[in-house]
Length: 119
Image (cartoon, rainbow, N blue to C red):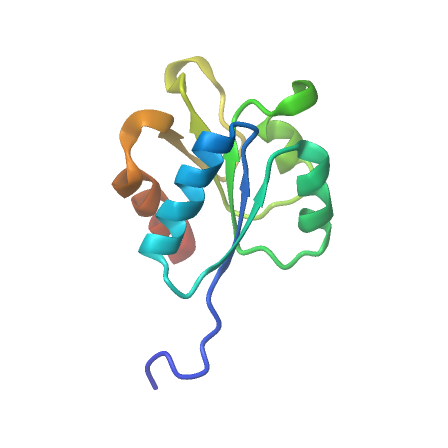
């Protein structure tokens, strides 16, 4: 049957750093060409997207604006999540999340996404 009629996954990038948000979005689009990617720079903006329930995977910065963290995002949804952080040894990741160090590069992010999507 192949990919005929297959809809791409929907990803939500939640990252208050515009640079890392753009890098994550570009990485997803390169690794998953049929994906739909939404990008949010604030926790409140992300809440609106999460409430739709139409997101297959989150890529979320650990620390967000207004003192929010990936744990606050996890409290809203059980959607699989990749947590981006510059300090992987200093955080406790939310449940059902893969941690990727921000400087690890696109292949590390793509690998974490594939792992989560595979279930």
